[in-house]
Length: 322
Image 1 (cartoon, rainbow, N blue to C red):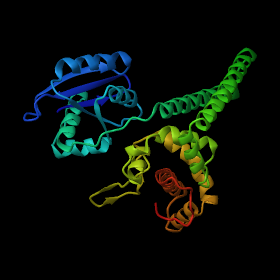
Image 2 (cartoon, rainbow, N blue to C red):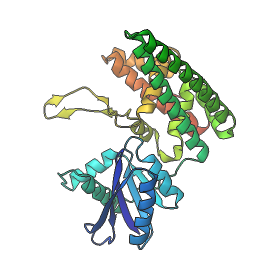
Image 3 (cartoon, helix red, strand yellow):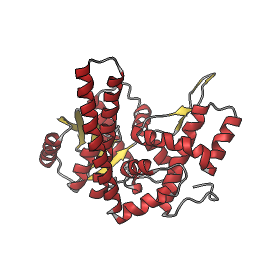
Image 4 (cartoon, rainbow, N blue to C red):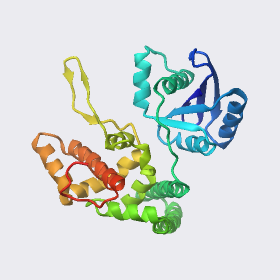
């Protein structure tokens, strides 16, 4: 087995291939564009340089890694997707002080060799399609809001008419896409069942359900609820150094779409979901700020989401710990 580390960003990715496990410092390195052309070039590069099966590891950096991971998985290559914090701690343990894309790729390759991380499983095509549609819907809604913001500014009549026409077009596209998303979920038995499970949780509504299903996708990628919270950037981050002790905050190193999708549901859940409401009131009594408490409620709501999907059972307010 040979080991390939990939450091990926929006525009490009750097790779480091360990060709001799007895000498992990000896690597072959290259960089490629983060698009289909770059993926194909990586495939050819590997076929000419890898003499054994390859285990690929990359960090879960935003959503930049997804297309490449799916490409490699579909090609039959073993892929592992790693929490960036694990790579950071590993680099610190090895006393690696410099930070470059090439060095990061090498560190990831060494991590893959030493830790043998679990294999990542790509979502089914139906889940990928739902994810893509939900994200496109989010982009359309953001674009619509930008036009509305411009409309509220002082504009001449010509600009106002143009903006109103663009908003009208976006309204039609948004409505059409929402209908397609609903039909896609209803037409897939597993998605439909999972949507019904999520609908049983007080605070989770129709729009949130589509985002949660699209962003969580394959639950087998998460070993436990803490892993899901970390993926969403909802794990608490403590700030302590010497005598300085700060407040715990959300790490926010994760899927920002999931966090956005959980914010308004959490506001509803603190009123109508008995488990989340009890948590919110307890945190306020203990002196937490409202925003800090809402963040904790977002995390609790995500744990409940993970629980009902993992167990295949509807929400039960009597079941406190999932």
